Length: 375
Ligand code: NAD
Ligand code: ZN
Image (cartoon, rainbow, N blue to C red; front, side, top):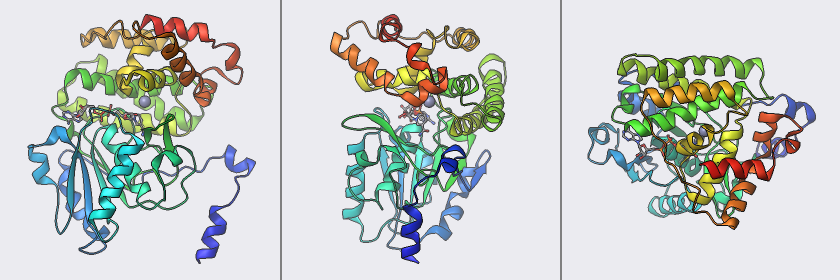
């Protein structure tokens, strides 16, 4: 059996398998207000035995919150509170993995991430690295993971990134900010409980929600678009418009944004993001600006690439009276600016999706610099 598996894993992708990508999806999902209460029952059959704990990685914004008491922590389970102040790093993943390995004699039965994209990505990465050797930084890229990860569950508490459905976990490593994109990254189970997103501060709600809106615009206007991505992208965009441009109740809005995030994530699975994401990666790498805000900062100046999207975005900004920071790039040195531009230009698949195979003739250092200077 083992030998067969080895051979299968080393299969070299054929042209057909590259064209017709065989994507994993989240195999199980529970949805609904209060569905968090089913977590104990969901985890029970996944418990290997009492020495193999469930490890809960929880956003520390919930410290002292009643949510912590509702976590079904039994036997030697452990709840680890983690700050989402900074986006996940490869060395943070490595440290968590060695801590878990040292503390427990058995590998955990499961890793459960509770929080926003930051906590979801951390838990995906920890689940992978518990069964794969070396540092998380060695797996940043595409399909470098070859061993099944630990059972892992994603429970979003803020909506927009689509990290709950994606097959990537975006990490800041020593050399690059790049995802671990693999079939083993995708969650085994997701719990979508819109009530958990109560209490998200308004600005943060907007920035993370705009990540979803921008996923839709970039996917729907990309050259990689096909009917699969389009169907999800259109639904997600429709929901985003309801949430950010219409007057609906808060409860409706939480439910709709949670589903918009899901569909937006599904839409980019089979296509790609585009210009805002490529340039936002540069901001994140050099200035540590977080994903959602970074996307907004860039997107406002992308009328050349996404004219209708930018009009809608400006309407959303003004409806919710969001004022984006200014002067963000003014203090950058020449070399920092160059790094930012080269990080952005390095995201080749994103540019190709946005502008086609010929993208290099359309995007110049000068053009990117001019956009960054406005930010
Ligand atoms: P986040 O996880 O960084 O959280 C943002 C802030 O909201 C934090 O301060 C957090 O404490 C707070 N917060 C979360 N839930 C809350 C709640 N219910 N009440 C009050 N405060 C709450 O934000 P995000 O925008 O969801 O995630 C950004 C991260 O997601 C980035 O690291 C980005 O790289 C990653 N990302 C991943 C994917 C993917 O497919 N894996 C896609 C997009 C973005
Ligand atoms: Zn995004």
